[in-house]
Length: 551
Image (tube, rainbow, N blue to C red):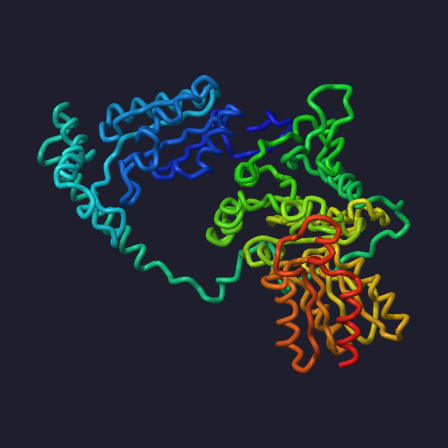
């Protein structure tokens, strides 16, 4: 099938009338992401069937505590005015359940919109081995549930129709028991996990297999980082028709003749005009952005999505951490969902936005196995890293220091790539190594110039990749040469990624002097004075580096 609705001629394994099936329980409807999923499906008229299997309890919590009025169908009935179909059936009645399922699939296959099917079912046994439901359910309620056993109802239906008798039912029972027994034997006899493979398929690439970058073309015209990203993304979309771009405010304009927005910082400006069916604004819902990116990726597209600020990522935590980041590893590489998640991050804009727009939070992200995290410090690397990110087959968090958006550097030639996990030495030196990334790199370079006037030559290393696959060899080689390390980071001192770098250097190179400079253990404060107090400044880098050398 050729999927062309998005303007993307894409080969997919899906047939023309495919539908998406989602199964949840009555308790899960209390999750905000269930509401987001249903709302997005309604908004886009997506062919999704949401089956709510309602056994009246979420472990021991009755449905009336989870759903206002205790009726899931009534809860979502208001979506019918926007094209959704809301059905309710007795899920223990084979005829009624079959009829409702047929109606749901037919509606979705006809592309009329999503379906919410509320099936009233039973829970014959307790939720888990540690749950004893007769401790919170009355004998009368349990007896009523047993009488509604769907297997018994199916047996009676078949007997009434003359299809089933005692002998044939016994034969079915024996056959079912045999299937279960054989499945149990296969499960028990299956090989145990191979310890040597437990670190395989965490990400697409082996952290120990680093490719070196090709030298950038330094003759390219100087461009601001935001426009280097814009240009690299446009080139990537021209080269790879799988790429779709969406997120918060990323589109240009709904009406012709207007210049368009193209993102808060204009990184995506003009892309919708160039690719009208492949760029769109999402709902202002981060879990929806990341969740639908997983779906688009599994369908064969390559989403490059924008979460407007790093600070806004937290509502999408479940989708990123528990769903996307675990998919490759828990399927032994059979299922992957590569995507690029772009986010403006960091401070150094005079306290504008402060704690809601100026946080770094790299340490919080770097502990998530299954994702890659990059953070450029200049326009050249930004283009090279973005090109690599879209080609990596990984989930890449692309942190864009908004304080550096307007800084210019040469735009690199088409072949230039910055491999993931490869640092670069921005300034050679022999007395102290300063490691940073993003906003701290230009500040470290300025500090190095000041130190040089004092006769102290600092080597500045731009880490660029700030995840478990960071460039340990380059950092250790530099520190082994200089004998001391100063990690300068924008993240908070407690929990910052720089602690990982410092600890590794201390372990691998006993005796070297190691120090860190980081943000204070509080939120980024308002105003220039507040920001200067919280975030690392150039004079602090100079003082700490000088002290390391003097010691």
